Length: 305
Image (cartoon, rainbow, N blue to C red; front, side, top):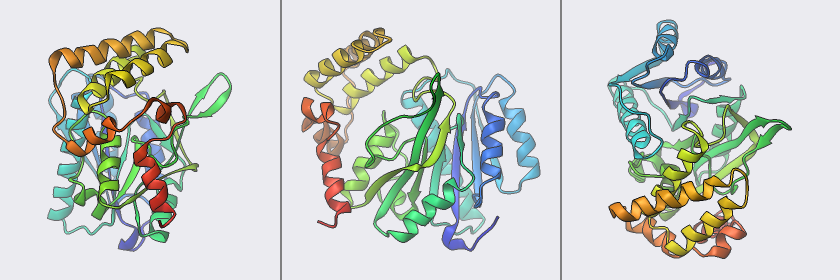
């Protein structure tokens, strides 16, 4: 269903070898109560049937476009941020060339299904509260006990199914090519005074746990490497190693530590001083009680203080 341009949004999805998940994703987006005025599907060199699947949809829907990139090794580190950044640059270029007006821009990972009114609900939330810059629904996965919420801070929108207000996206420099782009984006948004929110009652279903596309252990290696890159201190890294080691699979802790030490050995660090300042102020108790200074600041913003 189309609406007036006050609810128009662009949507980017990046994928690689997702032939099992793509049919569910495509059905999910095309059945939205408010569909995007432009949806860019970015193929990161798939070797399975993924590209053929999305080409079929693009032939049917004039608002669906494909960006096909050369084959490369699959990675969940900075590489995926590079791919997403190319997608956002391309979709904004297409919108400009076609004189498409939009107020919001979103990212939806290929392993997601969202409820039919997902984007309409998020847009309504943002239209009703001008200060909201980035929002998402809650991310759920299915396990032995049924549907389970991946519980994270409600003041941090989830990275794989989020929506930016256009002004916030542009003011914060677009999609950052870095580790943990979702957190970096949140930090920059708060620096400019935007509010952030995760609405857990607006449902997004993920077919696998976050960062598990290449296996849980490799995901934790990347997480450790990324933490060093962004400036997380050795004390915090040690605490996270212990915490990951105390819950199954316990090898997650070792994988995380290996990634952090590899980052230290290579000595690669972000030049983003705002992000580094955030992690330098982080304390062990912040993680234990799931409170960090940046999200405390966000809560004050939301309260109008």
